Picture (tube, rainbow, N blue to C red):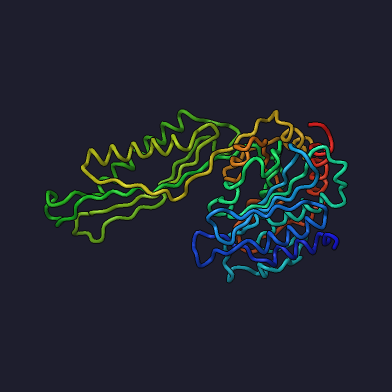
Length: 384
């Protein structure tokens, strides 16, 4: 059976729900999307490897390979989407709808469409013309845990040399992005009647002292680290949520703070988390409070692929845009740990991601396919 035409692939992907969420009531399997992609890729001559994600029921990665050997090019995307607010959509999120030179639907921009465009770019390629393999990768749960990408090994991807992840960038090449960690810090003290401070030990006042220290830590980080490629050229630390106590006339016995920290490339997550916890423990010790931590999000490393990498130079030449930096995270750092020079570049727009009435501009489709074809020719048919 031949590979469906592009519009049918786009319709099929959008019509097949694959929401990933940290809330169990919204989370679902991505297997139906993976099976669609596998069927289409196999009909185009790709060999298929459907990989269950360990410890994640109903979650799968797809590695579809055209050609033989090692090295080559990965065209990658995640097969999941975020949840949606049905009452805020003017279009059916699970029906590809054409209007105003746009395709509307959940995942059109972020980023199911890229997987269909990658298959379209590979249509009719004779694998005998490939000196290095072309790999189309679809991953699970990028929008939540990135467990799909984290489960991959270098041999799964045939020790690929280069990768393009089709996250929404307006087809502008992105070679750097910030990382992120999210942490909960819990202080426990002693409740008591507010009329006599000696009866208790306020966890809330301890947290106030900690927040002051964290803001000093932020100043130190921003003084030490600067990257002009980013619109916000320094690392950020946001104190996003605090909750403690239960009544004005009771000394607060427990207080919890949630924060996120977004480092620049070259700032190791483990070291940053350790420094955060050292600061929190010191304040707790000084105030005789009990201190606990909870990882709200284990973290994504910052990513940086050198401007001199062949994949960056090729994308800059083809798009006529210099490689840039963004603040959002991707699976790129995970592929980088596998030895793959990775670029972020896709036809959607980040402004459309996670929004009601998400759409992909139709006039982006042909230029994207043309660029992908040229990248395949460069990195799979030519010398590396």
